[in-house]
Amino acid sequence: MARSQPLVIAHRGYSGAAPENTLPAFRMAKAGGADMVELDYYHTKDGQMIVIHDKTLDRTTDAVAALTPRHLHRPDPAARDWALQVAIAGLQNGAPVRLTVQQGDAVRDISFVPGIDRPATLVTATRLPNDVAVIRLNNSLGERDTVGAFDVALERMQPSSLRGQVLDLRDTPSGGNSLVARGIMGRLISTPAAYQMHEWVAEGRQTGVRRVWQEWVHPRGSNVSSSVKVPVVVLVSYWTGSMGEGMAIGLNAAGGARVVGTPMAGLLGALGEETLPNSRIKLRVPVEKLFHVNGTPREAFQPESVPASIQGEDPALTHALNQLR
Image (tube, rainbow, N blue to C red):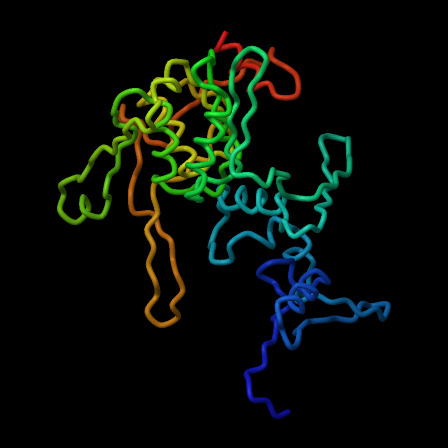
């Protein structure tokens, strides 16, 4: 077969994104531009043909085992927990996840489509009847336009007549950058203040002398005083990641904001980027440790938990509003 271009063959389908040797893996390989799909098959004792690589079902029919890193030489509970979370989260490609859950003798089936339904806007703002503004960032901390969108949203809330503000960071899983974070925090503080500490780990390891410094945030906006006269409560969750975590501890440190919700994502510091010389593949690796200005590692910061007695559609928001009475 003569070809001017290399032949792209998907090994067991698109097995990096879907379970190997399955129809989803084959369909994703085709959608991704593969010319051919390689697969494995066996005949069962009753003459049926099945597509599978191994001679046993143990590895590929256990969703967790299929996602557990293959380089492990012994069981690792942390790796299994990670694989379980990935399996439950699904591929977020529109395909439903179907789970069978057993607790004791009770068995039930669950089906859902992974993903988060979020508004198309960078920022959502609502002024409640009790003169409290709730401003939510829609996973937009990586967009520079978010600073301007936040300014517009805040002014629409008429900050000079507010009793309190709730900054909702529960949908920031992709993180972002400190320029956007400082731009937003600058509208919520009245005086310059340190909001987090950094440590450059490599220098300390190489020299035995730690390199630690504080990063500051400054008030921003001509009418900044109108937006900082009222208390701020920050809402966080497991989906508050990276720069979202930095904003939470930052507003707690610089502005005295209360932080309410579940533990955050717990990401371990800031990332740097390296490009491999031959493949040009970009790697993002941790290079800095990050801390609250009181010295608490960012990943160890504990938000104020929501009392179990608070029920309803959004207990965390209810608790935040209670703090602003």
